[in-house]
Length: 126
Image (cartoon, rainbow, N blue to C red; front, side, top):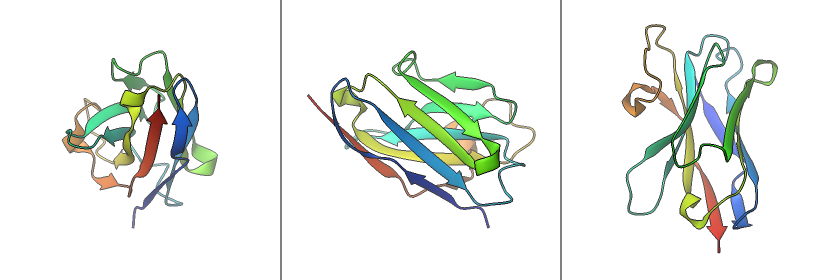
């Protein structure tokens, strides 16, 4: 059974940094096609923030380019989201999600992610 567990959320002042971690169930990391970090702010739709493919290709939302970095450590079954230069508008619940479809062509499509974590809250104060 695939499980994703996020950690690393918290409260930080604007300009600060946080690193989120998404741990994938042991044994399921090697076959994942893509892992994406998403977020949902209060009253807003969920959006994809960053994604990384099995081959290391990355994709970022325009709003976080240059500030956020997604990476993966297969040995630790973990995908990270390093968030620097945080802004109040980054406040949201952050979710990681995994796609196991080997035919996936666009990892920006949120509906393509099959497994989701429970989310971790990030709050950025001004």
